[in-house]
Length: 194
Image (cartoon, rainbow, N blue to C red; front, side, top):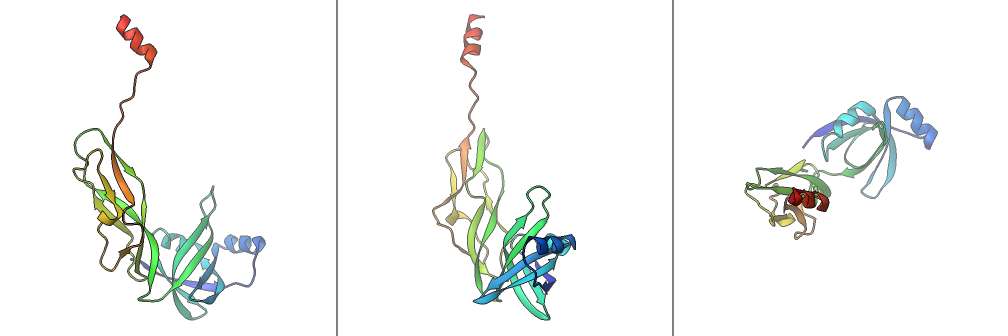
């Protein structure tokens, strides 16, 4: 799990105009909340935050006016066309505290020989883990699976200290038989006449 240190500045200006000015200075408006405390509106360095958010469930150490606080991203808003960060919501966490997060499901191995398709019914799993030990992803083997096989949430091995927060009987992956494309009826009639 990545731990990234960022220096934050508190902000007193709010609204669209203030947010645009912040982004023009290559910074990102954000809000930090949690543990029953009042939300704190801050600005973060845009480039460093963008790099940090490439890691799923990154743990951020924020230096806010000389006080160090741990936080994880809860909501990230990006511009739909250009992709730059518009706003980030951060949740305060403590070392040893359990948090619910989504982790990506990765597959390894090859399906059984034949024309089979792998369907990701769920691409992420909700899990509960300690804030400082959140897994980036979970990996499950699909080796030798054939049509009709499925993998349930309870079948996916989780790292130590991580528990499943999703319904354990939820289908995560299923194997389907590939459907052969049917020839149009006109083409079949022409083939039999020839």
